[in-house]
Image 1 (cartoon, rainbow, N blue to C red):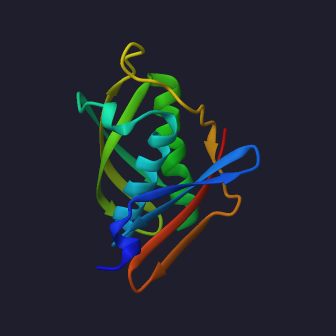
Image 2 (cartoon, rainbow, N blue to C red):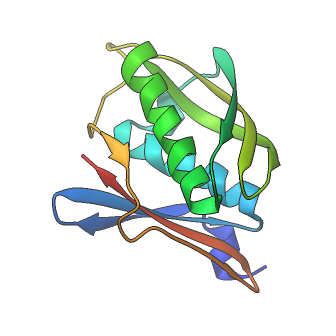
Length: 143
């Protein structure tokens, strides 16, 4: 197993924004790890309990748009329903559609320490790379 596949994600600094690089042995795992990286910006994923699950179905015109829509839907659920997620099972993923089950809980202010207010995933510097060791995704978020 290559070194990149063993890593799940890393945070990258960018002026006035924040970025992540997510890794996966396959594209599903890379999309799931990008979502985990998103929530690691917001709070500590280890502090999130699996008290609820949410099934999501996302469609977009192509794979980069699908990635942005996926992450922005998760940000929307955080902003509107106050849900934090820490586990993502992607059931199916094509170039234009994603079906996933997300696990987490509503924010408990006394328990969850919020770190960064993430506004949106952007197309700026967005990259999805496939290499011999798996996938590598780069996303910049507006904060």
